[in-house]
Image 1 (cartoon, rainbow, N blue to C red):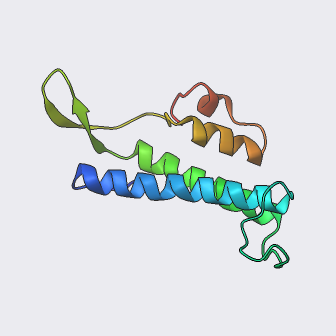
Image 2 (cartoon, helix red, strand yellow):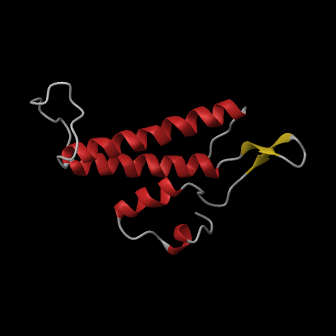
Length: 115
C-alpha cells in the first residue's frame, strides 16, 4: 500500500500515530504477561490476550513500513528545503524488531533491500 502525503505534517502525524500504536500494544502485551498493570482498578479483568496484542503490533509494523516506503517530504540540509523521497526499505528499528515477532524476518527486510 502506498500513501500520498501532501505535507510534512501529514506524514509526521500518520507516522507518529502508527508508531505510538505499536508502543501501546507492546504495553498491552506486557500487561498480558503480568509484567505491568494498565488498569485503574488492579483487580479489573484484562480484555486482551498476548496473541491478540502481538497480532496488533505486527499489523501496525506492516502499516508503518508502508508509510515509510511511500513518497514523503524530508528536509535536505544541503538545499535548505524539503524534497520528496521514497525509501526502498524501512529505516525504523521498531519495524524490524516487531516483525520478528511474526517469525523469521526475510533476508530482504533484514538487510533493508526492497523491504
